[in-house]
Length: 334
Ligand code: ATP
Ligand code: SF4
Ligand code: MG
Image: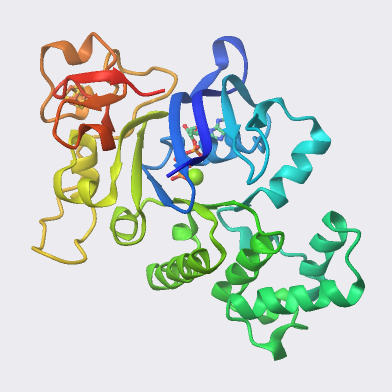
């Protein structure tokens, strides 16, 4: 299917000069229309930085130091999000690509009713809509995310965490964006709640037709709910493949390690092994493959040369990519 968002050689750093931390490194990633793309990786691997970078919401001292984020609108030519003016960017963020951040449920304004917070978004972006139409649309969105009509006039503190998160999803969807990015509610919500919210989002996607980027530590959730999964390590995408392929035969030793860190949902019970060692220090990255000090499969070339993300020489090669010296690649991705 067609791409909706194409990230090309994206680089993001925090700080300047000697002090700079390269948090996203040469990332190439394509989101296709209607798909759910899962993004996984240990804490600090750069998942949120990638999400903030591609929507230009990086908090200081974050800076994009290179790359492109090509967006394909439903109609018209593709354009580079990184080249938008501030004004166009504000419109882009809600109407084309919406984000629900880590702990977003706590960003609701405590002094306003939830219905008002939804209509405020409409008033700001759709000045041509009547008051009545705004109210109808807000009610419709809240209903869509499972908030009963009698809760519309509640204040955020009167709702549970899960309900507040659903309000945020309703708010993200209210302008009918093509892309919805959800950044890791794992830490904020329990896993049961997260599963409910994710399955609800996917049901909505089937009705409304948007694409989803879902970011979480929990690979088992991604295996269950996403079409494709990209795995990050030390700021780079190290593997990207259909969810079933990641689950059944991931090629990168780090992906295998991550899979071993979560209980399997179905099928044979896996032993929980985890990954020995700790994530790399971005200021003093190991040479070559940055995973090599922790990799059980490391061999000669690993410490000297950085493996480039490319299509593996396997029958399903065209559908996936990997950056590992164990898997010679045909052509680089991007
Ligand atoms: P988590 O799973 O914990 O959310 P993550 O994969 O989202 O982790 P990021 O938050 O993107 O990781 O962080 C990537 C790297 O960038 C980390 O090493 C982090 O310390 C660094 N970093 C993040 N935000 C800042 C900041 N504001 N200033 C400096 N460094 C930062
Ligand atoms: Fe392990 Fe080498 Fe592959 Fe890196 S390149 S994941 S060290 S085998
Ligand atoms: Mg994060």
